[in-house]
Length: 308
Length: 182
Image 1 (cartoon, each protein chain N blue to C red):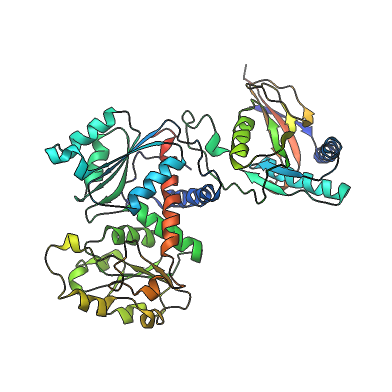
Image 2: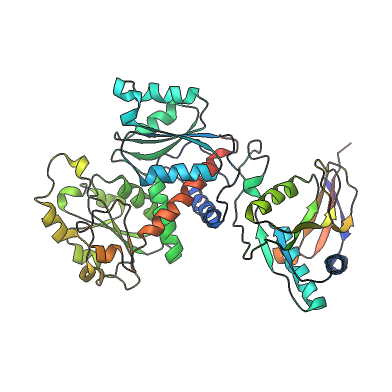
């Protein structure tokens, strides 16, 4: 089994077998990061360009480190420092990058579909590191890996995703991935932040957090995407936090072994209290560790093999 | 069409491993400082068997590690498919110990080259020795084995298969030769 594709653009278009392969390969890569010499020669001579049009610490660092641990060369380009400020188009910027013989472009962009657009225009592999409100596949995969490691199986697992579903590309990737693995997915948030008609995907929608959390196995908290909202979807942050913030009392409604996840960066005291974010149920830092392994797996699996 | 010959049967494999176990002990003057590292997948089973044999003879079983050489291959760019990656698991420090690297078949030597590079990134052994069940010739690199179960001269178009119980087979080594229709 190999990945017969050039790009990783979304979880929605991944087959179940491809996801199995990525997660299995990522599990094997975790050992590499435990070594004294955390570097293997698999991608020697390959070039990775991180093209980020939106701010990012975690994801960019994770992709950069993943590529470096595979011995690839990495260049980071962020929008503020690039020629896009001189009105160069996305396509021109990336064609110029391709002309430097790069093998991978990791792109984050504020427009949904930007990664698909580049993938169809370029020969090199494109990995979507978040496009607008569409998808963030590597985050979805690392969330799946974290749940799989802790729980073994997804079948019938009650996963509650809390917060701004409407603007969250993480939620979108998570929902696609979890449904493909047969999890029981519940969404909860203010009615203004839940896309209308999403029940048709096979998820359960709630508007009250307490009700949604009953015997939950996994809680995935989303960051409030204040920069993406533009207008107000709820009266005040304080009210949001009161209604949808996770605290110790609410966590006690869930299964005692419930996992608490968050893609970061955390708005402490808004989506989750520090007590819970740093508590025993939290696997937030394991998500970061797994993210590195998942990204190594993506680079490695896209590297070789004949493509259809 | 292919013709198959059984080169080693179960008893012969067993005797070859017993002899290799004795040779390892003789050359290294006992089992002290010895660790075994099997190359996935066949080499791992053979390393585990060697460890048990050495334990029978000396009383101590040398630890066994598992090495996946995928990330060190020299043909990642040219193969038609990305090979599957499995976990490397070497749960001991190799520094200043004598490592016996174990594989089922020695052929071009490229797997061993990859294994050597990988081992040296994982630690600094005092010495690395190589044990193989079958040496079928056709080396492309200056590599030789220290312990050989059986030397088997082969042609390029032949295949050597080491089948082991641990992989759900009856223990045997098979030489497969393609026969062209007239």
